[in-house]
Image (cartoon, one colour):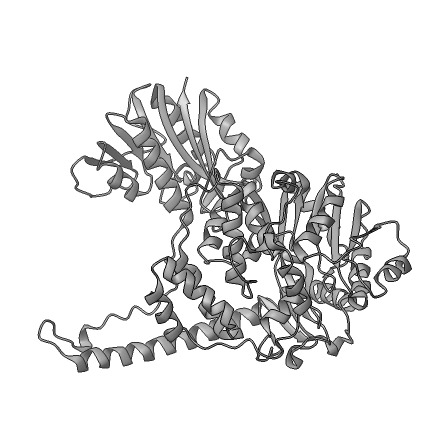
Length: 632
């Protein structure tokens, strides 16, 4: 199915870059798309440039008066809302990679999604304000895509754990117009001075899940015109972007939440959060704004670009109002001095390529798109022979990191020993180096953390007098035994002694229970292993079916079975496990009713997806399917 893809390009007095931006949009084999060029009363030859391209794919509209960026985007959007399909906004110095629209359409169809988001390539035009940045291009390598649980990602963005670009922004996403319409209130969709940032938060609030592509489809161009660049490099020239600010100041509606234009991403983020909280109070009634997160992020950013007096006064006012003045002063004192005015150096690793595009005779975003597309194709083709080299480099880095960690360990030991103290002896012979634990986040196995948490909650919900578990994760049985007696059975008995828990030997293919005798039974991440010899059991290609037959036999009528297996394309990963399709599991338990199905997706940082669909389950490489069955 060829979905209608609508590209909106808002522009004002930038005919020199707009021409090349539109050319990238026309470099597509895909046919069902439209380009809306929205002219914010330009005084240059913008209209003539659009006409010169002579394409029936382009629709030109004009405001006939200068508008703020937000009002202009709402004006442009109003023309797209007359249509149906998916929409993205593209800056007038940005670009789309050749034939990307077809790939985006394939993702939409494969996942049946209302939103596709992607990473962007960064390209600095030869006119970039900061000379060392000129012509530099950053190409992220990546392939594949995954579904993202929007509310979880939204929560992380609100607390400044991830950037707004991880959300489904119209600037790096195609969003179905039905989502945009649901955010259209009082004739407006965009409601803050940074409409791209606002759209990410608004869409994440209005959509359940979206697809994130690791492959880039667009180029984020930074030319001498760019408003974002002007704010970021104000240390070089404070007068850049002045017209943008002046037009915004004329629009009083943009200063509902802050008195002054926000010159940093953290300010734009907080502005967007406050706007959607005010616009959709029933959806965000639970949200308490943590202003300390904002102050920390804002101080760090402002230290890089210089405070204006107005900006600092507003931070000070917020801190006083929220009782955080001490925190603000401490942040000002301790936040590291940073500078965005540096250099981008050519480099290459497994995640990205940074290159000076002049080497490829690039001087605009159209030629940048051509070169970037070729480099990405080359990187995918070269991955086979580059992988051993990159793995070798990675191993060297790991060894060097290990040496560095060990040297720090030695230094820390000497410091602890020098401090002395009467409570403990400190002796080198008692050392136990733990060199890999100093991580930014706590690592964990998503399958085993989430599926056991899910099952424990379901057992509590059912409230049986006794629960029986067959060979699941032992921690699950020990914790559940705190609120319900548990009998744990395993082919390899576990010698655990706790009140409320008994452990015994059992063969899952020949369980020691009468028919229809157990009202609450779990068997999680077990059946997929049976008959593959991994745990010393005999090889049997039907071992899993024998185990399932026994589970079905012993569950009482009306009883609950909590069953967990890997889901995706049916296959054997010898001798580790099997992977089952959603329909295959339901076929095996045809005598049972499915009460609930939850999914833990692979290759994502999200949690449980409750009531996930069959297509979502089957799209996994190694997902975790959590089935709650009830025996008829």
